[in-house]
Image (cartoon, rainbow, N blue to C red):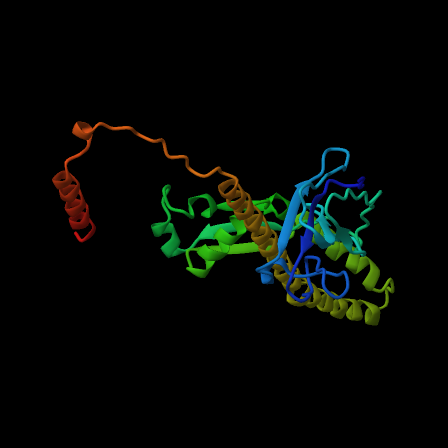
Length: 278
């Protein structure tokens, strides 16, 4: 299966009815669903190689949809048809091509954190929030694990402050391009006065609407990715546990004179019981 970009992909089958937003559902029609709201079903994850190929093996029988994303790009890929997995089957989906649904798809936002007064005292080098006490302009694309969930927890406890913003060069370029397209080229006094009003309108549009919406969307994106990564890690750990063979107890043929005295067993049991109640 060939794709244009580096993918992180998943086949998902759910028993629950469909949701909408960020992950694919398999009941009703193919579409997006929010992974943070889904608590049951099966998820199979993989990552493509350098040429865009990937293979998912040992998938359970059922109907699936394909979901994929490219780190650092806005917009997720979805395969619009259901994939029916039957026992012993091998399915090739052919070549898939991702086209970003928006212009300027690169995610520019940067995340910074700093401790509050309480956080500066509470968070030392051994604290669980030590690694997020100070972050300086970390790109959204670099958040590939559950670190954002730790940041949210620390922010909720009022130990750190979180800032999400565009790089100054990018913000300046956006405002400059907006001025170029929105302001009048007139040189009259009235045209200049109207341009001053237009600049105020652009300022309010950016700082009161667009940038706050961008921050909200970035937080939602980070939370969804972090929770999906955490679910994947839990799944790997659980799979490692269930794949372990049952413990095989070795038979010991002890002679009667080698067996522990019953009173000793009783004494050990009493001592352990006392320790539990201390």
